[in-house]
Image (cartoon, rainbow, N blue to C red; front, side, top):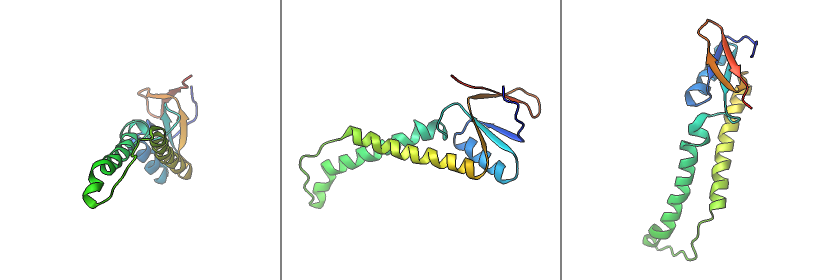
Length: 132
């Protein structure tokens, strides 16, 4: 159990959580954020919306090269998908964004705890279980 005292503890580093934690710290509160995953940013940033959009953009560009370019007089031959490269690009985008959130936490002095947090119902009381 963590015994460090904070003015505010935010549970989860998704889009609402990390923004709330950073803003609270900017307003002068001793702020912490508890996140289960090693990377910050929540499901949307790490495995949902952002990775999906990165792969969707690559797929759309492939589709354009395959069917739309010819309308513009551009001929493409030997068109192929390099899935390994597409996934690498997606991982780089996610990595840059999660590192950006971590950098904002550091800049604004938001303490970061990796684990599972829960409110105990008492003022200024919270607990965190370190995950294996």
